Image (cartoon, rainbow, N blue to C red; front, side, top):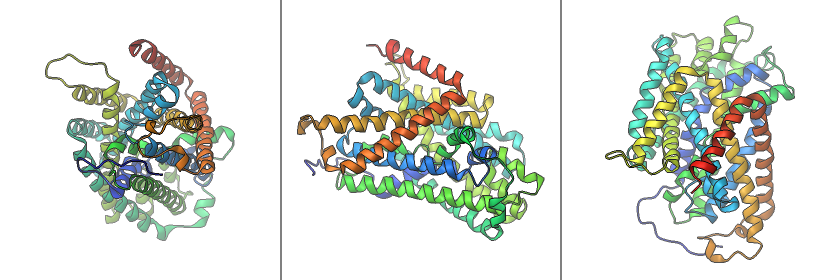
Length: 438
């Protein structure tokens, strides 16, 4: 039941903008990364980790919708965790979110560099191109948020058009035999654990919507955010399934050159070139338009990384240098180092790890906050809605589903990248208990 509503004091975003933000921040996952999962399980079996990841994200989206309605003035997912578990855990989750966006940024930039390198037929230029894009968006992100949102909406629409072009171009080459008999990979527990990060990559960053809750239109807030979140999720799920299904069935896996798809940072134009021929006009057109999908995600993710880093920094006393500028510069420097020194697969795993840590904490927070509400919380603690306004069975099942799957993913990362896991935990402890002690 709605308690109060405050009129908007400035222009707010609605369902369409929420959908565009959610899709735009994620859509690069359709462009690359999934082929690395194919190399582990094969195209057919990869649908298993994709299904598990989709189930986790569906639960997470429902959790974030409820939490946003009950706490519409929260600054992001870490705020929910802070309300449930205290400031120290809020700081920890803030770092996990930063980890997610910070390492997704150079991963996307690297793929963007390879897409453009493929288009100009010179892949050696890829890291230089990636560097230029990172620099450009580091400058863009110094401006107000609404500039970035408007740009993201335009780029998202272009990216979706590009995916439809891909699907329409390869559907005529689809054969069930190709899908069923790629001769690549297999599925067991070990391979599932190795492949799950690349399945999560197809949906990673949809929670970026939660960083913009304060800008959502206050009129009909619950309906607006529910429709926006769910439309974004199901759009991404549909696009991901179509790309995976048609790409796997359109490639002739008996050709030796088909195996190169499993290691490329530009699998979509590479697979399209195998099917239609590299000089085909549609391949060139697709690759050009495909840049917009990567640019859309890079702009959104780089913006989110800067926005997330800014409040985590201590107060600066450098004349003429704002925290925003310093945060943007740090994102650029870290991305630059990652682009020139890391493998894309490793960056994806690091980003996914930060994400699933946050998913685990946020979903657990919902369970705690729902239970706490039942012990006499006053109405004044809530802005518009209470957790009791949401179906308790659906809410609890959604949260438990996300908790269980995200916990499995955290343990999977600890197994796959134990050194990186230990470093992250050590850095988190230093930050939470020493740097932010006061």
